[in-house]
Length: 114
Length: 114
Image 1 (cartoon, rainbow over the protein chains, first blue to last red):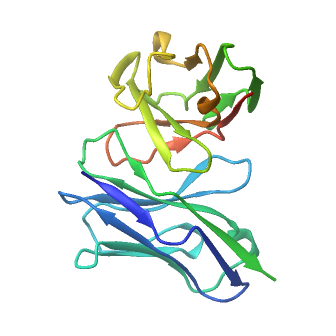
Image 2: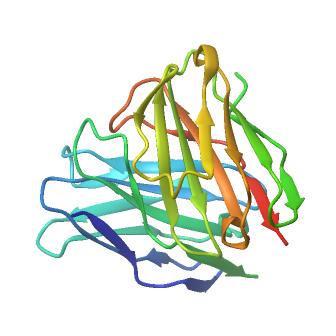
């Protein structure tokens, strides 16, 4: 069975410093992995996705994530945090390429200190 | 292009009452999904429509929940009778094709059962 674990429920960084949001997954097959972001009172927005192509995936707003099969990880990073990055971030796994069901992590709330 | 819309944005009802949530997907998206986030836990899959047919309803919690998508356009999710544990945020998403293609999410409906 597939699952995803976000290791931190809350991360706080200063503006201009790097962001690291951690995600580990469990999957019996080659997974597809996604990061979604939810700003207050907005819908979930796709940041980036990994679907068995390049292991380093670049997304919107300067975010990127690296798929590491040996570590079963898909951590989200950004070199320099901006105040507008404050939101909740979700790591998501889908096990089969045709699967309709996707599994969400519990979410990481990112706070940015001025 | 209009995004996924959901109505109402917030609903407060008493235990035992009925509530109907509505989702309007992006025009032309045959795939429509319902998810639920209860009490800050993981966002969980409820069901998936392809046009007007239920492709996967394995996530529906019990028979108090009824989802419909007449005509393959908008969808409704009815909870009857509502229980306290049904409180949470109900998200709708749509996609052009199923699988690893991006799902576009609505802002959610916050349901509070008192």
